Image (tube, rainbow, N blue to C red; front, side, top):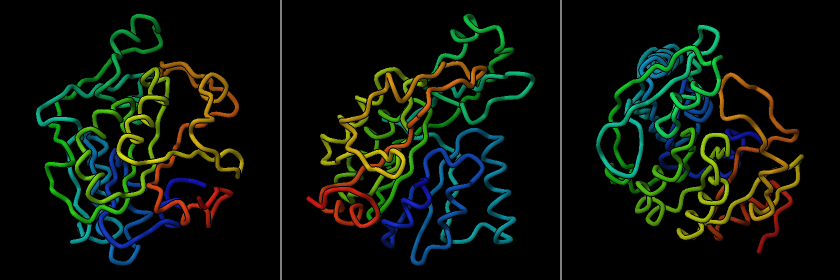
Length: 248
């Protein structure tokens, strides 16, 4: 199951927050759901331009139920350096991160030819005072902990379902710390393994997530599991309806 299918299956009317919207794949996939508002965050200027172009190409305008935001999300308001590594003359935009040190990686991997840096605004999700968030997709290339801390009040207030991409190659230890942080907020985590849904406590990053932190290296373990799903206990029956997950 991919992220759009997860969010369609557990859909409830309200606001879906797309964090790390990039070129708009998730925004476009879910924006036609009834009674849905999309708030999409993409701080990389080149990706934000494509996101806006994709939405305008679909609707001829930015429709009222879609809000496109050029900020990064984090724990506190301010500004951060967003870095993008260049490999083979191509900026690796899907690896754009405020958490990774690409200069250090470049010193170890000469295939990284350059590092582009953008000064971007950052704000906590809680500062928007959203009261109807039913779903969050989070892809922050290593900055998941800061984003979730800045969304703590929203999580407590709204109990949205979450899909979170968590990778050790972006931030070692994150496959343990991010679930622990969400557990404190009342969430339980799951991952899908060839159709079998397993609690995140069974996840073994040494076996299921071996990869280089360099965007110049594309070798990964097989399997490579990086998308995790989080629900509060009251939503577990909804998850059980589409997967082999205990209802209690």
